[in-house]
Figure 1 (cartoon, protein in one colour):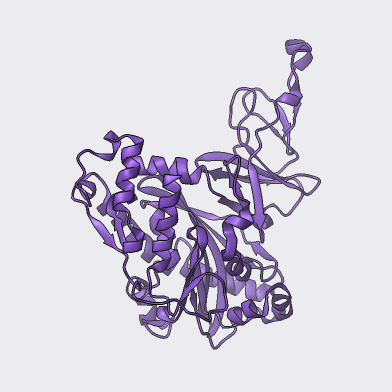
Figure 2: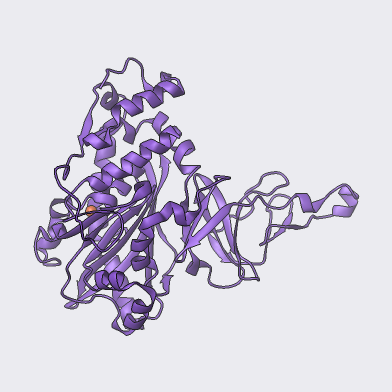
Length: 434
Ligand SMILES: [Fe+2]
């Protein structure tokens, strides 16, 4: 690696990219520390990744009724997602087209139209401007309301997940997800899933990539970071997290599949439905699933986890967004999902399992965010850059993928590998160069 002569913020765009390409070497298992907390890298990520790819906005069950709406963040900009009376989902930039005021200031609600708090301009939840106070008197016939509709935001859904993008010419969502859909189907498409309650939000002083990276390929840390759960008897042994497979697919996506599992940890009253919605191979894998931990590039992580509640192993399904709010800070949003057709008792115990483990107060979540915070602090400032500090991502480079794995993508025979991270950073670098 060549010695940097100037700091990143003194480089031209071309020099920055050249330096990135010299120093970020996923195929060799070398990732430099500076990419976690440098403001220049953060700015470039915003432009090349967050403004270009599909980013999760929410789940369709959060807008189950006509006229429901949500406001969510898309790459630092507020958007309104609506379900209008025709049942269709739409999204708009949350800005009044008159003078730019944030049109809707609530997180969620139910209404057919939105009134701007500044001058009272009124918009239907389908985007059209329908009312202007004193219009005839103060504008005469000069105002053409049809030209002042809200600015549309491109959205698409897959198995209930709503994604948005600022890209005017995006790769179709299903192509972007590609082979990874096979795994998403087990998590979100096995039956109708519903989000319970509003997502929980909390701030962590961490770079967003550490969360994505942790879920895409770091099962190794479980033995140590979460060692207390083995000590408490919540899992059978400290190395329980090794058994299974690690898989990655195109576009930086990947997951860790913990199996086998002697117990079926999903609601048994829905088995026929699971069989109808999944292929035989998917159902077989799900029946044997202990956990599934993964990341949809760039910052959506998904999780099916199992916990013993009153001596019964019970699954809980969550998703979380590592939303960047600065190079060294993110807002984490966590959604708990449950099978809509499960019994009330099952739903309650599954929620309890989530609260105990991966909610903001959960035993795992607190372990992880402590680590994420310290890594970010150690990567901050100019020293990690000038001293060329790097991380080692070589785990599993000597191993060959499994040949007869039933799912798509590249699979390795157990979960202790960093292949998923190397794949994540390969795609990250490709987009930074795009
Ligand atoms: Fe963890």
